[in-house]
Image 1 (tube, one colour):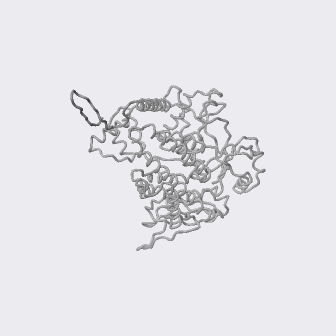
Image 2 (tube, rainbow, N blue to C red):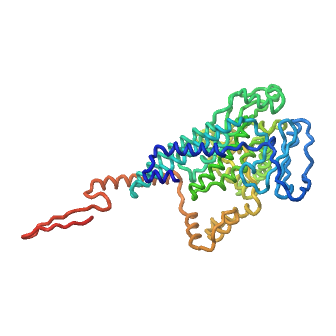
Length: 547
């Protein structure tokens, strides 16, 4: 903020702002911004207690697994949350089949503490440090760029709307390309963030939607040799003993894993989802860096606090690292939605969606084999028309499926970007993919969401305010004027993107036309000093004034 004030007062050249921000970010990293993630092998000693700690009561006995394969079959970990007061203890499984203990203070709300430790890989400390420097540099460059754009905008005339739009359009295009290149280079969590931002067309500018949309399934893949070694290491046997053939080129590659097509020994067409090597440890480090960036932006821009969203999102993302959990989530959602397909087609609750099936016995924490479904992406309109899919029926089925998950079952897939929704070429039905990121709602939150929709449809202002309070958005109901303004914004007339962009282009063109007409006039500007000379009979007069 001080640098931007100096730039505004012309005490510091704008050309040195970005290097200074880079130096500050590097200093933050060196002085403590970098901290390696905690793993099961790095046990945190418990805080000293005044009274002896009672023994932990496990909900079930510890896993008597002698080998790693047996341990994976029995389950990945047991959580012991009912420990001594002020402490929380977790028992986790190490790579060699032994168990370890991880202790942390209860109530610790930092992102790393909320993440259950898993088998995170062995990324080097130096590599994580260099990765943190790249992350903080990218954040500083993006923040500094937009601060300079704001400074340039403030210097324009207040009526120059065309100039402001041009400045912001160029900034969004420039920074969206920059972010995409950095996200692809960093991979991991940042690709996941790009997927999330590209799916939020309600508030993200169009250049970000276009460029970050490439993060959904167009990420550079890992070499086949590394992927093959990962599969054989997880299954404990050569690849030829499990599959008749495996395609070396992936059919999709995302932030955490990539997918290869294969054929089982019995001839079944399947796909293999393989987790990237060392992605777990990098993910935890990226979560810590993201939390640091969010806290820094909150201090510099108090009106732009994204820490709660980061904390909520980061608490669920690490669940994607365990494919066993994802397989259970997939089975649970399919079991919940299966009865709706048996209803009468005229019933408003009827819909028919398809899911891939996990092949029994071929799933571990890092590799999962599922049945293959040939389909096209839900946002590929030309491909949908080519296979004869009914767009209205597709969107109706997807909408009802998610409404059933959220408002009825309270357990839903929380990552519904276009890369995770397909339409089958044969049945023309929607196919729901990727259940690594899920969310479970409590009964109170689920009912509040339902009441919110009903109150919004009936334009019940008081009902909307009470429902928002039930889902966690605390508003002051004792100030009627503020509530009325909020409801006016909620119930404003919304328009499709194409129509809104067309009106914006027409408005910009009208502003250009008015500016051109103004330049043809005698006077340009708010106030112009003029001198009027007149000649009367027998005398001269001079009058001065402003127009």
